[in-house]
Length: 65
Image 1 (tube, rainbow, N blue to C red):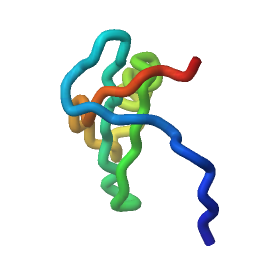
Image 2 (tube, rainbow, N blue to C red):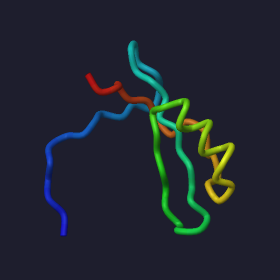
Image 3 (cartoon, rainbow, N blue to C red):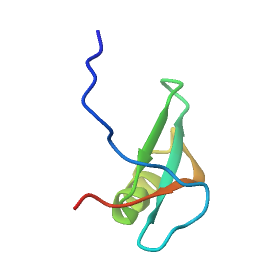
Image 4 (spheres, rainbow, N blue to C red):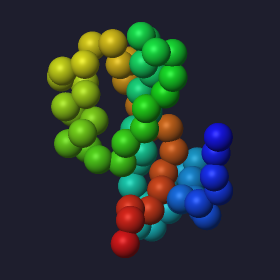
């Protein structure tokens, strides 16, 4: 079951001042998407997990305060 936990973030189709790209991957094994705002995590997934297909920037969001 699901529980509403308030707004997690606001997404933008184009970069806004102070926002960062959110990188999108498709998991070819499980059939779902994975998103990260971390460039280091993006690079780790690209280098180590070939079953994740990198789909570039999905949208832009502000990092956690």
